[in-house]
Amino acid sequence: KAGVTQTPRYLIKTRGQQVTLSCSPISGHRSVSWYQQTPGQGLQFLFEYFSETQRNKGNFPGRFSGRQFSNSRSEMNVSTLELGDSALYLCASSLVAAGLGEQYFGPGTRLTVT
Amino acid sequence: ELKVEQNPLFLSMQEGKNYTIYCNYSTTSDRLYWYRQDPGKSLESLFVLLSNGAVKQEGRLMASLDTKARLSTLHITAAVHDLSATYFCAVRAQGGSEKLVFGKGMKLTVNP
Image 1 (cartoon, each protein chain N blue to C red):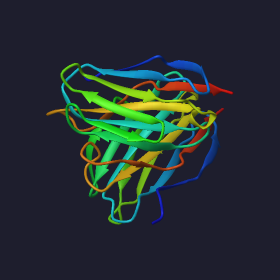
Image 2: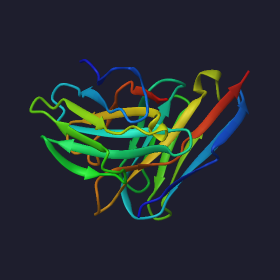
Image 3: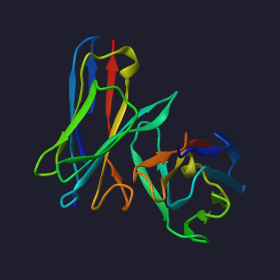
Image 4: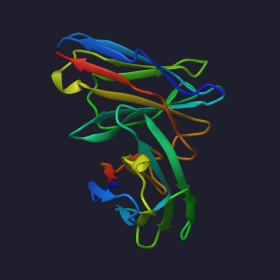
């Protein structure tokens, strides 16, 4: 069974640009959650999508948005990039809602903003 | 708001030694997860603890949950170098938002 995949794996952008990250969950999983990981703040929850609906949202500015498609694939968008957005972005999928079942994490996308 | 604290945050230990790390959380929860992360890698699920008194073991790691004390422990027995990694606990608040809140992680280095 294929695991969670994320593309791209590495990305370098400049301030003010926007970026879209993609996550393909494990086949059959309906929940996709996104996390930002930085050395200073650790792992912080961004949002969760379940069956194309946003179920939960973390404390991030509106520049961070996401969506989920009917095949459960999810995208995350960050507009007007800031230096502080440099981080490892992880997505995780689960069969049921994220807090109710086991989450399986993808390899992450390393975003560097210069 | 649910807060999750891990301690210690850094641990250097010798191979063959035992040690216990702790995960405290601030509000009632009905499930707790332990994850492992190797440098530059993603998170790997280790344990899911669902009830008070739950104990799970895998190899040299044993996790337990005390929901009354809002505490989980991860006990390392006879550490080996391969256990060097960062260990996270994550908690779901009971009755509230179902999102998971992660601790800051404990970086473990096992020296030969």
